[in-house]
Length: 510
Image (cartoon, rainbow, N blue to C red; front, top):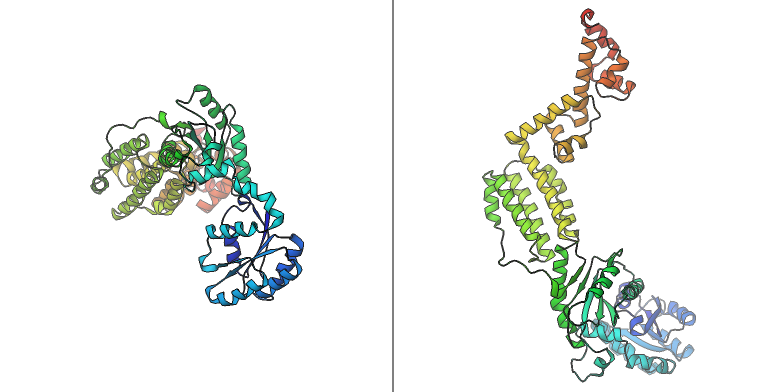
């Protein structure tokens, strides 16, 4: 492994270089970073880098002095100078001090940096013998990654193809790898490769957050192979295991990946209960593609034909959820667009949309984060339910529903009652029901329930001789002192005084 020290007074430059590529995979290891020449000298003595990459203009000790000190005290260390265009003449003088190479900062990129580092590494005697075989013969996983990314030669006489077992092959994509740390991701990848028992995995790489495996499978995937893949998925955090169509040459891998995997991912979004998907066994979509006429839907809603409009919408969402014809992005965009348009439309029609406005970003975020169509549509249906409730409140049907709820409270006031119970019983959204009570009764649900219970208690106190210590339970309170407190707050007097001042003659009630 070739050790590299990065010296630059700009932290962003240092971080940018560090994040250019997977250094260890390329045979390099960053052993430190410094903001000036003085700090760099201490790190060189301590960490023994093979190569020092240094800026020129730095505080405390600049790059020119650093180069001179390194070549005097650590002559075996190679130096690459980073410079700006305006420093170029200044930099040229450093070559007399033994600088191996220079890179112009405005042209700094991953490819040129790696090329320069590799060339300088080749000049280091201590690394030449150790590193040259691995550089000359990259690992089979490295070769596979280059092929998949289109960076490998496509000539069929290339010796790289001979390193792979004879085809045909299939690609297996495990989605996703959640781990952020690059070393942990590599470990995660290795574990996944080893966990597929019963199949000889040729090699595996990470690509766009997924694990991509090369499998030596030909023809139809056998039942035993399916079982092995199914067994792998059980109890894992993988969302899906996607298997491509077969291909005969390793150089077809890129074309197969780009053709098969996006379609498999699209199907996977719509088939959350089918974690193993094989390209040649995908369900066929029905002939013809239905489209949604947004203008037609809006006109129905403007005409207050909500029942027809919502049925038209629900029919399309159901159709979209089972036809696999849209990407997950298109599906989510459609649902979000309907939510946005509905809130604007409802506001224009003078409905109370405060609850929808407050919750809309929650709906957008939940749909956007959905791993599958079920999660996305569940959130969308919640939005529609709240929308229907808002509409119903303004209609005769809504007034009827509210009247039924108020009657229910009257009838069941003596039982333990909560807003969520009532909302659940009448299929209302709890937060919307709470807002409705406050808007239409100038009080919340709890206050309204207390009002009913205290009214009932007053009736008992006036018309019966039942002890106060029993009346509180008859009207739904579980605590006597709390009942007395609420009663006094609403009537201005305790229950005992109310009874004395309002009691009827009870001779006939014995």
